[in-house]
Image 1 (spheres, helix red, strand yellow):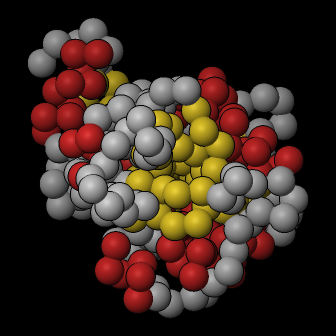
Image 2 (cartoon, one colour):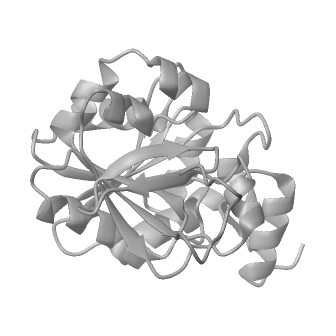
Length: 248
């Protein structure tokens, strides 16, 4: 299994966040350490960076990092470039661990890779967890996923899906939050990277809808509880610093 950590410097909400200090280490190092904890012998972790500053930082803590194009619009496209640069075989499984997830449980990283290996007819694997608050169902920043009885994703949306006549009732239906971890085979990455964004992907701003619209199967594993939130904003960064014991 390969783990790729896409890291982009020019985040609109928190510029330079891969190098943001968390308890004396850049955030990207914390994410890399989670990947190291998920590895078993034979695995490999690569940081996919769009800026030389990230490459230089990675070298200081012993990580393998490669420079990728600044023009990529999605993590999938950036990871596809890494797979090509590294010469990975078409059937190799690659896990996308976002560079702003310093608290992602290593067990989740391992789980999505193994789920794809076990589900031969799936093109991708990801995860979900039950939503426990109605406000989260209605929050467009929390992506929802609906799966079939076989564990295959039917749709992802920022809207409350499925629509509930009479209002959302969490006792009537277990709404699922999408956990943004993905596992792909290299051949899937190659295919997706050559496809233009489609209408539903652009409307929802969700890149996984490119795969669904193309008829690819996405296996969804449900986990017992949500992982800690990633870092999108300054407030998130402060919260992660507190969690890891570094204060402000």
